[in-house]
Length: 155
Image (cartoon, rainbow, N blue to C red; front, side, top):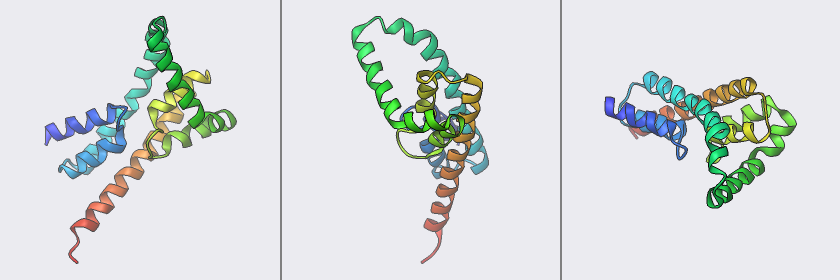
């Protein structure tokens, strides 16, 4: 069970799944439903400060290389296209709603990139991301629990 919790946490830290994959993984592998929610939410929340550090410090160093710079520009354009209008128009609320959507391409990684690109206040952006991650995790957690309950019901 501890290994399954660790894997769920790693999925929640990963840009390929975030808590949208970590929570269902943990629940489907028998981890306590409250423990998996808490740890996956906190792991996903930890991504924001790590991304801000990366974007502000390390990204500037790596942009010296042409291949990295090209891929960074590609990711930035995708982030602006996906979140740009809502985040610029609605600010805090737009960022929160964008991060809250439990679909691929949204989440704390995209929210962090949007924060960096639009030069938003980091404290406000952190709270927008935190609230968005919480509700996204709650939606995924509830949907997974309801699905598991439906699967285990006799026909």
